[in-house]
Length: 164
Image (cartoon, rainbow, N blue to C red):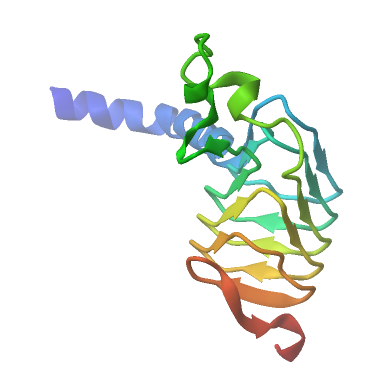
């Protein structure tokens, strides 16, 4: 009986499930109030997490993002090896408030025609040049030159798109 019910529901449920999977995998998530998100024309964000806590994110035209990419401007300040909020007498909540999380200074800029592959993490204060490729799973902590291919943790140059 249960198997028959499953077979009857499979047809009508398939488009509904497809819609929700498409929605989940095709939308981006914006968090934080420190900066602005600027997105160029013809950009595919594919489930990208954009954290604007400590800066702005600017994405040029014709960029491609794989699934689960994280653009993280958020930072926590430390004083003498401890989180900055631990040196303040008042309760600032679990995040430490403005004392610990700066609102500006850690912008991310991604140049036109760049490709950020699945699972890559780009930290704040980084400029990714035009036509660059960030390999899957890379952690970008420094600027990436135009047309460079970077990969690894931390990301380093492994090639050049002009040579392809």
